[in-house]
Length: 490
Image (cartoon, rainbow, N blue to C red; front, side, top):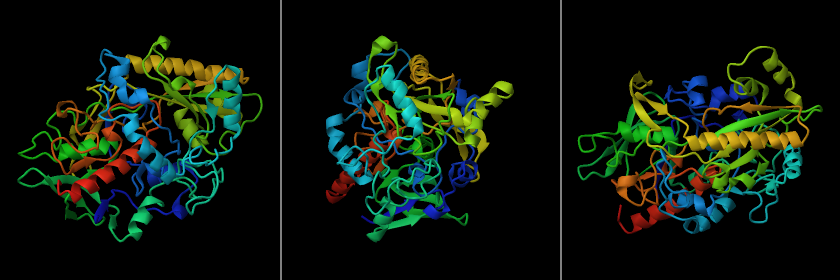
């Protein structure tokens, strides 16, 4: 199919990536104005940076760490499994693990996920070795270097990982899977893809029949352009996707496109997150090696006797000195903080990521007065932790500290959540149109030729990093769109 791809950011090459955290952040991050509200810690520490995502061709596959985990069966049936939880807007997905399994398999093969298709796991760096030692001593069993979309050996024309340690800053070797230099160049080679970088979409138009008919965008020269389309697929991450639908209101759709249910922007999820760092009496040099190649999955099960529904993963993570100074304890100062930073090379670290509860009140809205560079309302990101999230984080902090204590830690440090990298919900799938925004193929209930193609369509968040599921859903959606077009249904 002839396809136009509109990307708000620039197109970078591997050679342009910078193995320097602050310089790379300025180069790649989505820095357009956003506002925050709610009681979550991010609103206090980073009031205009609720999310740490990318504005570039390839999107956040440029920034992601590569962890590629399948959802568990029960996570597609959260409402049935967890029951009614006060304050949570739980719903079962309109598809099951069995429905998605063949697409997971295709995604894993496309992305080259380690520990699948005979691909060996990545080697463990020192950060992983510390985690492994502590985890096995306290009885954890499911501990390894993860399922990663980073080549452990040359594959698909890309080299093996060089263990540079700058996974969040792009991948200068190209070992990490990113649509920037994998899927997009392959699509361009067919002659069917017209990629237009620095093209910021500001509105989706519809015809008299109510079908999506065109997309209006601002090009790199600041001029408005209109691209007609037979179908429109929106993949702006879970903040920009609902914002665009809300900005596209009309007399026929006064509350925005695909929003007859009133659910566009609602049920924003960003995963239960936090980090545990620990200092040791000998150097760890945890900044060396693949950033997130290490995982403990024992706590990802649903075990309500722990005091919460759902589960969480424990994954190796380490930051460079600038980000560690910003994120270890935002706003901290004085002798204790200086001592922690002095122990940087003696430190190990892990990220805690778990299923947070969808809440209707956690939502993306259009700000009443603050405008962006195009004169349009900026998105406001409102989030409050659910009591289930708080209970899970408390348990995860305790278990993370136990892992490091068992490995001989001198001190453990509980680090609050960073700006969100896993942005989910806001245009969720639902079996009934009244409960969500799109069906099990990401097709909006209201407009047959309008699709949601990113993490916005997640009904619930699961405990796992979302990219593999996003890719599997995209492959499934692409097959469905092709079928629908062949049948002239759209």
